[in-house]
Length: 157
Image 1 (tube, one colour):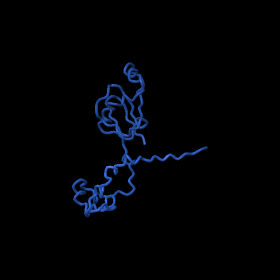
Image 2 (tube, rainbow, N blue to C red; image 1 turned 90 degrees about the horizontal axis):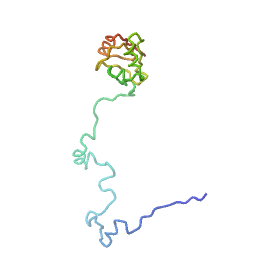
Image 3 (cartoon, one colour; image 1 turned 90 degrees about the vertical axis):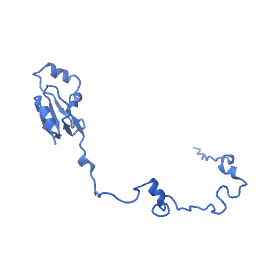
């Protein structure tokens, strides 16, 4: 079990400082001197000596806006929606053709909560085939259009 440590050492000829050999200040000027962090480290001075830069390129960086919401629970407002024009496309294959051919067949049941949707909205139209839809919420239009085809809406918890 031999363990070797490989350290890559860049050859001296590739250092950018090679070009500045013999030039005393190496491009940093004689008067100002090349000192460590003359403007401060990182974002220092954003409200003081670097204010013009911050206001020009990062407006609105400092300060607050709005109200705080302690212990925000995003699940409370989570409500994915689906329109009624997509209901039949979410059925298993062949169900639509079977229901269209046999008018006395039992109305198919679709539970949209199992497909990841909580609310059914009323955009689009439904074919004249009864359908039973289960969901947590329904819009008035969706409920009206589903019942107009002879179907039913079932609210689930």
